[in-house]
Length: 207
Ligand SMILES: [Mg+2]
Ligand SMILES: [Zn+2]
Image (cartoon, rainbow, N blue to C red):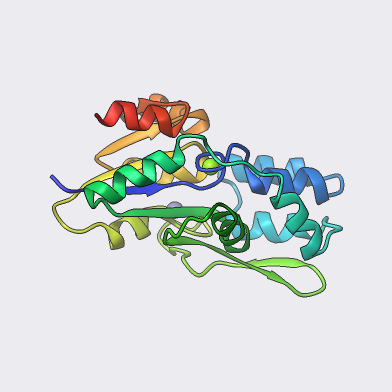
């Protein structure tokens, strides 16, 4: 059966979450409380990001410098090579920021389609959420609706992720590779998930 992979970006493809790195580097006090509300799914990604950005003191150049420190998962390249060889489509679905994904993919030489929130910089940061799904109401980029839109009928939908924004599509996938908060969520909700720590693990478990 043909497989299609949907992969989270922050903390899954990257070793550290770029959104987390941004708030730690750029935000003044108060971001933790906003983030906590988001983790509890009490406020949307759009509200969370735009409130947090009010606390930022940083420029795009500061952001580029920060992004230069972000490393990607050591098994990711081998995973992408495998998918290319097998003809399996891979899509990145992220509730993070297009600017960061574009920058990091380019730096590492990857060309992979991605869907994410649009980061705007005009005397400060804000986001606009092109892939918001009204039925969901929380995700900035609702991975569930993208997954349903992008998966070819009849293909096995495989999801790889680690966090809160991955809980929305998890129940709508045929197979989930999970770590971190996503793994905890799947266990709590009775969604079967294969625990992994890296893409090296994902590759091993696929063969
Ligand atoms: Mg993540
Ligand atoms: Zn959603």
